[in-house]
Length: 219
Ligand code: UDP
Picture 1 (tube, rainbow, N blue to C red):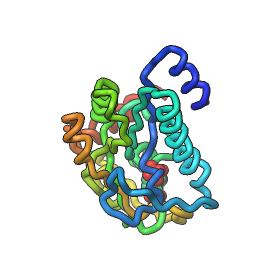
Picture 2: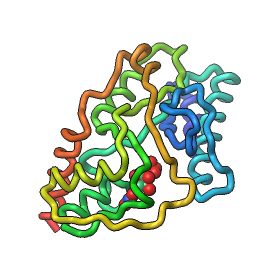
Picture 3: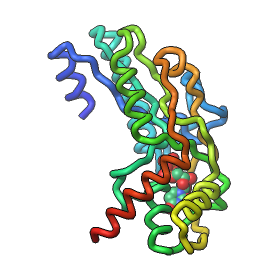
Picture 4: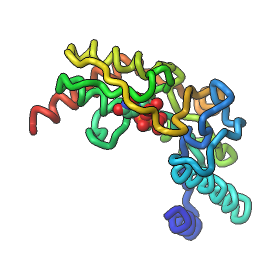
């Protein structure tokens, strides 16, 4: 897919953006993660197919850039959430909100001490648009995400609170290679794109909860 897209962009002299991911940092040994960090991915683990696939895609982007002078933009997208997420794709924000609204147990994997930093979708989109409109020389990779860091347990508590849910926690097995901590260093995006997220987790969660309430009431 990426090679087709690169070929198409080359033919039409188009600028091309890759939605890369904080997963390229694996279970990071550097915190917060800067773009210069090369990551800690387990090549043979269950997440490797996604992580290594994303890593080799960045390699191809930069090879095309070097060989053909293509205008590339590589964004490292950290955890993002908001209205119109699929309710059953297994990600933490949608899982917890759907469980909370149903007063079902909130499924915390492991002890819930692992951290993530959640960016509201509209903030991310604004960052991507600014990146696409930035000068040619700025190829990235550039981190796009919200540096506000929370444990998964804290996220669960906030969602229960904001949705006035009666849900309790249940603890399930932690998936292999689940990153223990994740938080973007966005110094580069702030200086090159004059961008930083505006929407606080609590406000973004309120909008997302409202969305899922509407969805569930239609069913
Ligand atoms: N998680 C959880 N319960 C769930 C879904 C996810 O505790 O029902 C945890 C998961 O183990 C991980 C974090 O929440 O530590 C974020 O998971 P997600 O799949 O949303 O994103 P990623 O791990 O790719 O950052």
